[in-house]
Length: 378
Ligand SMILES: Cc1cc2nc3c(=O)[nH]c(=O)nc-3n(C[C@H](O)[C@H](O)[C@H](O)COP(=O)(O)OP(=O)(O)OC[C@H]3O[C@@H](n4cnc5c(N)ncnc54)[C@H](O)[C@@H]3O)c2cc1C
Image (cartoon, rainbow, N blue to C red):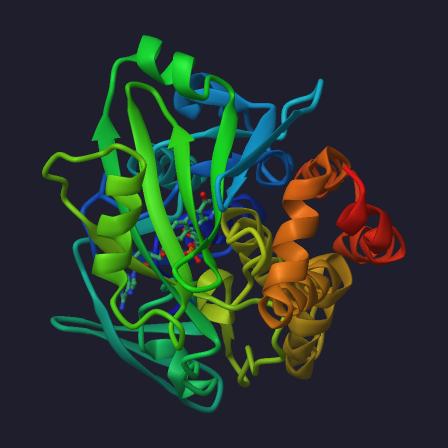
């Protein structure tokens, strides 16, 4: 009987595993892939995400420091940089492998190449089924990401306006050409994919290029991606991969009596930017904090429900306002896209949101108060 079984070894599962190991919980982490494994992602790793880690990742995973953003909309381009770093770019196979290694070094058991197919909650424990084995634990964290199905035992399946579809590819390029093109900023293209966006992120010897938009608006993601690639001068043969991103900021059921959802499985993503790694890491840790208090400090089992409110207190407010901004942009695209590309202050202040120096709530308030200025004056 384990204290805790974690399903999934992405950032959320690994962060949960590391904390559980440090607190001395008997923990098993089950991951279906053999690491390092490919994960579709732009690879923007925010300073917020870094702040949640209790170890230094810089030497092992950082590729490029990001200080700014270049935003494109209907031929208009606006670029803004900060004096401080907003994010770095990373390759997910490398980052995730490193995070899993840091979980393992705390002494937890890790099984890779084994898929959890189901679980059953009983009085006092949970049965966890893989194809070949049955494991038992007092608690389970489902950190299976956005496309797993276990989470739907707790929460409803997302509707087509509650998740985005993304297509991404990695395009090799020498560093000098990347430096010339974008150097230390991210390239964002608004209104690609019918109200979604496209990105070109600089990495070490490659670009991450992708598009994403709400599933309900994106009838042919592959065509949209091909158009985006050609428009930006990428005319080669590329391997395209798909991924889903849940819309964050929506109220979802994320706990049952002994099971907790974390990361993408819980829907913790900043809808406006698509950032999810930071929230995956932190929600995995919060889940372990609550579970360990039940196991080690004899808190009541019912306190597992505090997981949702603890996440809310820390970051759900920001996700809620990010969703509000995304919905406002979706509702009044012409006005908002004009605002975003008409005045560099709007991008400048948004970089502060990405760097966690300003909340979405504060940003929206500022944006609305200054909208007339941004619409009519440069
Ligand atoms: C195209 C794309 C681009 C993105 N770009 C960014 C970005 O630039 N920056 C950012 O911050 N976020 C980005 N995101 C979001 C980010 O990738 C996610 O928010 C983040 O990976 C969530 O972490 P997680 O640990 O919850 O899930 P995941 O990283 O998806 O990890 C889940 C793990 O669980 C495993 N698993 C699944 N089911 C089972 C099972 N049944 N049994 C065992 N193991 C299982 C999977 O193999 C996987 O390793 C992007 C997402 C997409 C799709």
